[in-house]
Image 1 (cartoon, rainbow, N blue to C red):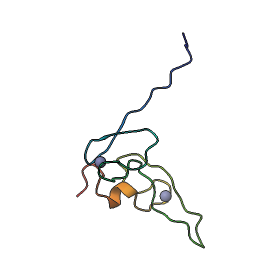
Image 2 (cartoon, protein in one colour; image 1 turned 45 degrees about the horizontal axis):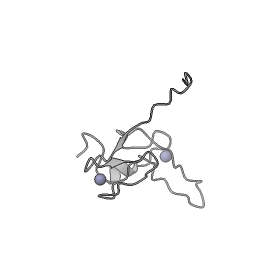
Image 3 (cartoon, rainbow, N blue to C red; image 1 turned 180 degrees about the horizontal axis):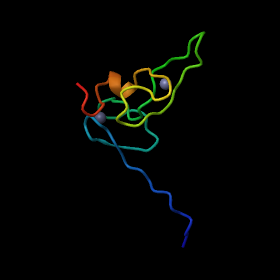
Image 4 (cartoon, rainbow, N blue to C red; image 1 turned 90 degrees about the vertical axis):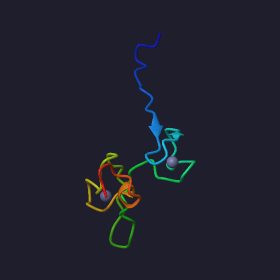
Length: 80
Ligand SMILES: [Zn+2]
Ligand SMILES: [Zn+2]
């Protein structure tokens, strides 16, 4: 018995088509929707880029204020 094995495997589903996805997947294999709500702030000469992973309901990055990939894909709950 491994008492320390309390790692709960998080189940990931596509927000658009509800396809079951692997934890490590970044995009849905069925419809190509992003599964990780990353910041879209890109690496430029002036910026190192953000790449923060935000909550699934975040329309904007909590770190830098740039739109998230879920925002651009129209996947933020309650967003029109
Ligand atoms: Zn999908
Ligand atoms: Zn950001």
